[in-house]
Length: 400
Image (cartoon, rainbow, N blue to C red; front, side, top):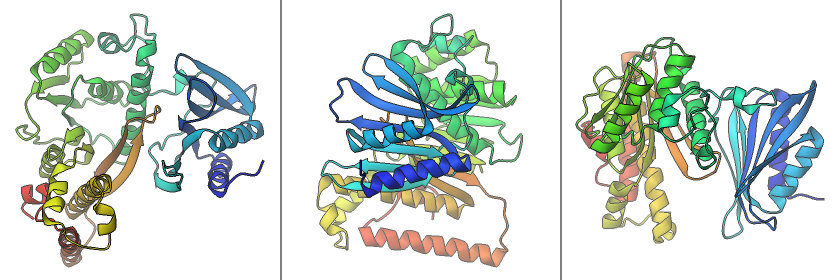
């Protein structure tokens, strides 16, 4: 069977990752084929009786079926499924992520992003062994309705458990970029029911043997009370949840600041808190980019992309990119190395952009540093003028 160029590109990258030892996994999603109830394909490498194979999980609406294939057989099967049914394919490697997607209009797009997972998984037949967060003997997972009292993950919580582990994989790779023992105080802004906050605490204390203090900040008092009850039962002495807003929280001495799904300018409030605290690591997953979109709608500047932004959906996407792009520039202005990549859960929904700032050690001389900052300010100024933006909320918070 002859395959199109985009499939050949994807398969070639996959084969190269196997050769170089950088392969992590493959995920195929958004299935539109003829096989009833099929939702997703997950591919990982396993070693069975000293023979390398591909373990492919066929995820259906009601059950999962795992089959092992020789590498050549599995590769042909993956290519065939991309060609017939799956509209999005993601290759995860320790160097980069490669995404091939067929849009609703039939157009094929291929894009690369920074690696979201930098640690190779185990090749044992039991995938549970490779997870950073284990399901056994974790009272907080039981209290949060993820597992039963014996540590077995509930069927309706499988996606949530995978999401938790994927999140910790990403954070673990980012934490490893920092000097050892850097993380001493963590703030999770808008922690909600605390799934990810508990998992991060578990990882820091159980895996990294850290003594870090972790605080979940949540506006809803019932969620705060629930999480504090779970904390007490788990005997997590350095974990607490407090009621309040991101804007009000005192982030002094925070080393790692996280804000996932903080709506609109609440993400800016979180980044502002992290920068003012001189946090070594800032991780945000923004949503609801309303402030910049309103600016663009009010001013309606004509430019080279007006033919796109006259459509509401494209204007929304453009506003998202501009908002997060300026956020990244502002982080760079304050001495952070930035990364922006798509955080795709194993279920492929939802897709979230992660904006990450890792504090860099100062290396430039004062004059060069001043020139670098001025260049960034000019980029921000030019971007705002091009799109008719009067101000960016984070820029205003920081007085730039």
